[in-house]
Amino acid sequence: MPGPAFLVLLGPDYAGKSTVMRELAAGEPTWRLLSVDDEFLAPEHGVLSRLKSDLMADTLPAMGKHHSPDFVASLLQTAVVHLRDQVMDCGSHQPVVVDSYYYKILAKCRLVGATAHPVFDWWRGFPQPRRVLFLDVGPAAAWRRCGRGARANPLEHHGDRLDRESFTEFQDDLRATMLAEVAHLPVDVLPPADPPATVRRVREAVAREFA
Image 1 (tube, rainbow, N blue to C red):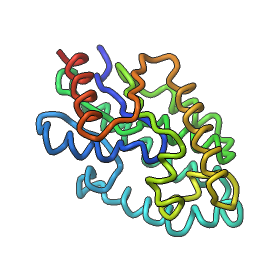
Image 2 (image 1 turned 180 degrees about the vertical axis):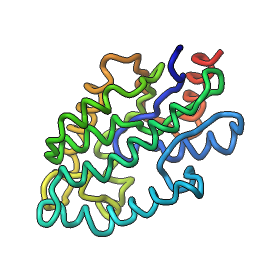
Image 3 (image 1 turned 90 degrees about the horizontal axis):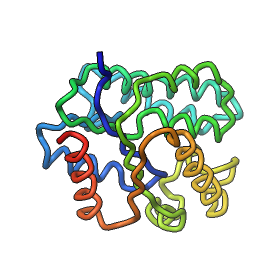
């Protein structure tokens, strides 16, 4: 039996993936769009919203003090398994686009020092997409988009202190780590562009894969 057919939308922080997903949701009602953003979660999956809220408000600020990186990875695994379950529920003909899948979470866990390698190997055994669409953005543009750090969280910079240098270094490392994780797959790197142009390129890529 062939596995599920899907594409993954990937990219560094503040690359514009959420904007693209919202535009696709509004303009492509027959597509299936999978994400752990609240607006894409069904009411029966509200536990993910609650866990994410607790993670951002309580757990991440205490990482390295009261919670280990492995503990953070354990919480993030709920999002990974949810996306895996949703992918497995998809057919082979309906266009399916997944926001980041496990690739970005795995990369971030590695960068903050999580050592749960058996778990990472399990994730890597999940169904693989036909293609990855990598929305590229430079750290300078990402820094501006996050309000020069005002909206950044501890999974978006190195160390305890957030500044432009720690953010830039993390984003450079994140980009390289994600691209290494998907090196075995067909990857289209989409250069920075205005949202309508990016959405158009994503639509074109999905149309080719599901023609």
